[in-house]
Length: 136
Image 1 (cartoon, rainbow, N blue to C red):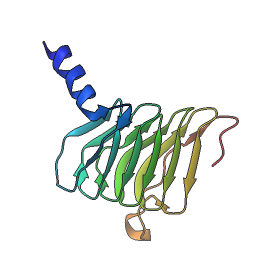
Image 2: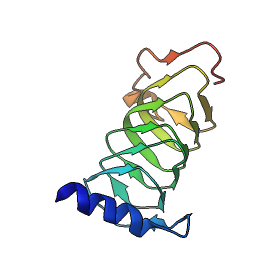
Image 3: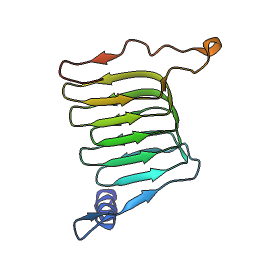
C-alpha cells in the first residue's frame, strides 16, 4: 500500500511528462528526497537527496547536507556534507559548513563560503574528495 501511494504521488507531480515544481518556504526538519521533480524555496530542511534529472534551486537552510545526482543551485546556508555524484552539477553561492565529495565527472562550482565565515568559529572542510575528471 505504501509503495502504491508513493507511485501515486510521483504521478501527481508529473503531468503530461512535465514536472510540477514544489516550493518550500517553511521551516521543517524533514529530509527531502526527489525522485522526479523540482524543489525551490527559501525555507529550512533537514537534508536533501536529488536523483539524476532533478532540479533544486534553494536559498534556505539545509541542516544536514545534500546528496545530488541532478542539478542544485544553493544560495542559503547549510551544514553536513555536499556529495556531488557523477551526473550532477552543484553551484554554491551561500555558506556551507562541512565537507564535500565529488565523484568522477561531477561538477561543483563554488563562489560562496565553505566553512564558517569568521576566523573565531572557522570550521575546515575536512578532507574533501575530488575524483579525477571533476572540475572544482
